Amino acid sequence: MGNQKVFGVVTRYADHVGQFRPAFWEVKDVGGAHREPVAGSIPMVSCFADNRVAKAHPEWVQVGPGGQRATRDQPYFDWDCLCPSRPEVETLALEWVRDAAAQSGPEGFRLDDVTFAREGYCQCAACEAGRRKAGLDLETYRMARLADFVARARSSVAGTLYFTLFPDPYPGHLERRFGIDVDRMKQWVDVFVVPIYDLAYTTTYWLEVLAQGFRDRLGGHPWYLELYGLGVEEAKLEKAARVGAAYADGVLIAYEKDVDKLRRIQEALVG
Ligand SMILES: [Zn+2]
Image (tube, rainbow, N blue to C red):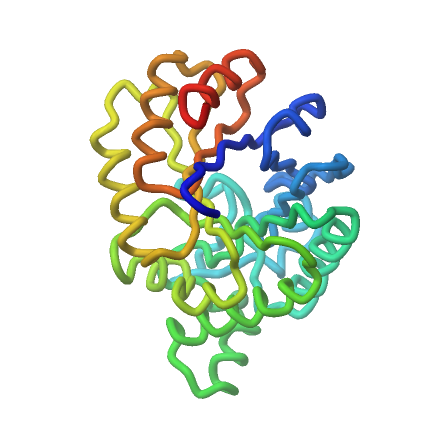
């Protein structure tokens, strides 16, 4: 990757693709909507978040302590989380990955929402059976389950594999909270993407703390910082992008419509 910083976008506008590289394109979102891949973009697939599938198959939803279900009816969750231990769920998610990856070029592919809902999830019958069979405690079993899924997904992706991480760099948190063994994932994941969203970025000290934390946490493995762009004042967004670029290998701006604004920030960052 050299010293040249990457500047890219996550976009819903086909005309942005080709103007910025990388350009990520949501092929399947957390709501369950599917969109056709766009040539030259990097498809993103939300693997274990899907409101539509959860509604059709409530028995596939992750179950937490006390039988609480990981759905958006609960105060904590913004979408419904499917259980990676259910063979039907894994088959479906791998199909989504295969279909989208088959249409993507060497640009690669991005795995989104490959995660357990939070601590203590999932305790459904499939997880309990899998955990017992493997002779593991729940935390270790969850990490093994997601690692196995990513290894399988990797075999469908010819180009660069990107993987989205929740923005918590504190050692042990991604492992304990979400079942993501970051160090183990490095063998399959080429570039981690960390969305750190704010609607204004009026201050950036916290962004710097998190970005520095990820640089240390990932130990030299490539990673991009993703900022929320839509409606954010340009000067503030540019400052946030500069802060991120000091620590990450690349900066992505998500959901901004204004191409000129994106271009000016790109020029300020990478020339
Ligand atoms: Zn489960």
